[in-house]
Image (cartoon, rainbow, N blue to C red; front, side, top):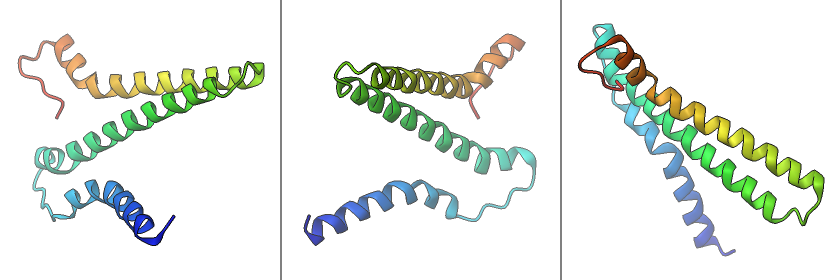
Length: 116
């Protein structure tokens, strides 16, 4: 691979990982817990939620690739099955953790409930 394509690939990777981090580069002075939650904690949790979903989807694709390349070998098929099971559990936990405040708020009876 030639140098300009490598440089472009590394720039895209750096932008992907450092882009969300620049959101937190603005200094925020939180005077109370609510402003800290809204200005710092909620964006951080949203970023981690998105990251968990992306990792879960990538792991499901890795499991599908393992299934396709197993060639009927029982050990490779069981490894692919295990990877897919863990990816599904990870996705379920990520989705439940993202919707947990809404679920608790609806059970308690709060009228206006948001994720953050």
